[in-house]
Image (tube, rainbow, N blue to C red; front, top):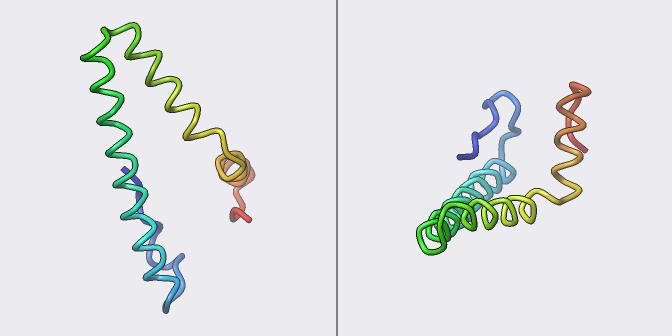
Length: 80
């Protein structure tokens, strides 16, 4: 689900291991959340499942990091 940045953008050393661990953790969290959303649709019906999915998505993306990431992408700069 999450793509690792190109190798030329990642410094060597401990940071490389940290990024590997971070992407593994983020992928595992995303998979768990996705499973919960799918289960909600099966257990409650499509309308309530979509509502549950929307709530979870809002909770996961309502962060300053997300806002900074989008701003840096639009401004074609590195995120701070």
